[in-house]
Length: 563
View (cartoon, one colour):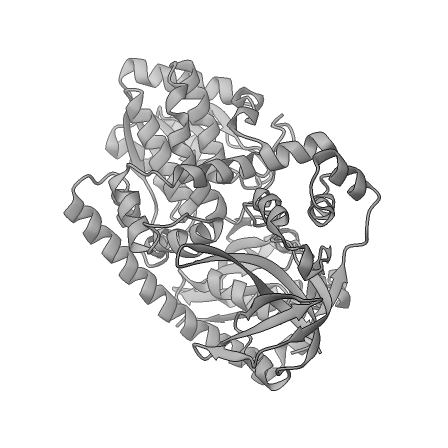
């Protein structure tokens, strides 16, 4: 693997003024400026903002019509069918909206397609479901923006449709009662980056406000936080407020299913972080959809019996373990294929497929391969003459744009800038690759394919004091759009013999100008061949805290080092 390029953000003039205005360490002010937060007002909102800063939901075009039609359905006793998606975002959007509608006295039901049999989204043939269930209003969550034909056919059958989504539309919008989607050019909404749970939350916010029940709104933020992080939405604006306040709410959980899930993740006795949402709680909910048993996850949040919640959580845990095992097998097969054939030397976008690769986990594997080879990756599962694909991309390459320009090859496609899904005939794969490869070659420059470590600035180890750490804590939650800050320190001495932990991690003591901190290199056991006690190194690192015997400890998490 080629060594990573260290890219250090240049110092900006705004940093000193911001540090002085807010009385914060210059290194923290520099992080804010690097995130394009340059005014005192914006910085105060970022560091101290709360739910009072949420936007008026009626700023989103169509909200008034959606609220009016739902109110009418409740008054008339009409049955409402929520149409969701099988990932964490879609599952939790479904759970939230069903709970809110039930609270308001609605007759609410839900339907979520199975990933392995139905595929993504609302299909034309799904019009039979509301009819069979006696529903006269369908509300989509985390899907539906391209369901033009379904909406038209439902309307013909006397079924109204409200779309809530956060994906890009197709060539035309569904002729629905209301379309709530903040990415639409004319949506009027100031924050286009909401996940599906965020859009569903705004609808709930408007519904509860109309009913005079806004006091119950905060309870939904726990699920919004999980869904927002799991969907890898940018943690800026409202998303940041959702996650920040949702994490606070997760310290006190009353829902039996969620409480059981948190305990099963080993999080019952400690403060939950955004990392726990993305790597512990989210994957267990997601495992149900990925392995073709989505309803297990929804049922968990409506279960009251302790024995039932325990059984459901155990099943999710088992499915997650199976998902991990399946994922590792596919990753190793795909990695070997790329390396043995030198595909990363030939192509700027990797496209691989197999009938043996589980359709539910190829997206996760694509993400891991993207990280390893630092280029966009599309993986496909072949079944019954169709190729079902899932892709992930590096930050410099909007993969959805590449798919847009190949759309004539697809039966269906969609997604976000860096995460996509598509389906095409298996016998059309060669033609698709022939169209995609020249586009990728022309649009992706070589510099984009170099692994880069983006560093916020220098930080002396002696500056990591109590004041620094208390201000640093205000920067959380970290994620897309607000990555965990990376700092660099030169002339650092390794003063202990590096130890290998669990066969894959490296731990040593680092000293600079008399200040000693413990350093951990995750999955960096190979470094033991290049560093030893007495080595002088430059470190690229983030700050991490841990608790030991009731005491908070500050450590360095090493991203890279240079001897």
